[in-house]
Image 1 (tube, rainbow, N blue to C red):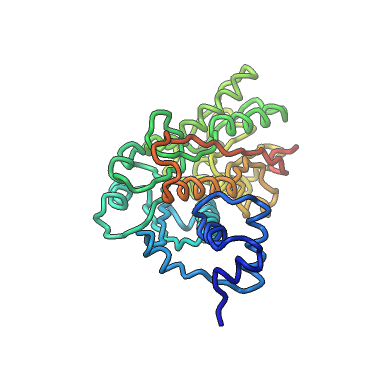
Image 2: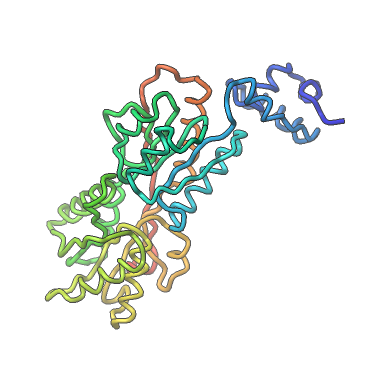
Length: 334
């Protein structure tokens, strides 16, 4: 016979209500009590009837995750972590790819797609978060990306200015003086590239330097990184260091440098952003800014969970900044 709630309660020495609160995340439970309940759940092999629970609570048990890309290593890894964090809370995850298009970002929230979810986590590239909040109506929504100080929805983000400033400071500290950047994207509305450019300039300005050049790109992938580096190497005065706004750009630049006989890091120091797996195994390995993706995913899902369960009704929107670190590897010569 399948284990029941009261069987778990008896083994853990708690009430049936406490067991229910633990397995449904419906209320706060003391850590030691939660641990006993979860141990009893594991020992008895208890499996809650999620469909019945959601029906009683007027929910679907499904949350949406909308990202611009699935094929990029950064968003692939982030999506996987979001799914893990949601599944730990008993949710099924519906993943949508927007391609960064404003019309698709809007349609996911205005109801025209016909999906019914309990809430959504979205990383918008084009539609302003305030507009998305208005379209969502009462749907719980968490935005990944740049912090909106006047917004009405929860934001979880990295401090891109501080992260890029750290990368620029590092390149200058290695003795480089002709430093360029690859990654401006003025056509997009999410502001990430502009903030990284701002931090990059601040890091150089502290040393009395200005950028040699800042190259605009169509996207953050390898092909554009290779193209941009070739353009930089055609300048009358070549840069001796380049900060790329993504690791994929940096890997493309690394390939182009090799094809042109430019040695990394001897002739050119390179740094990227995102800490994707390919950068760790490149030759030379890639110096990069590493955002805490696990915490970003966990905090985003926790925010959504609290909104869906109604624990924070009436609470002001939150602005959550997750940490980052600069990982110094071979490509910057340190």
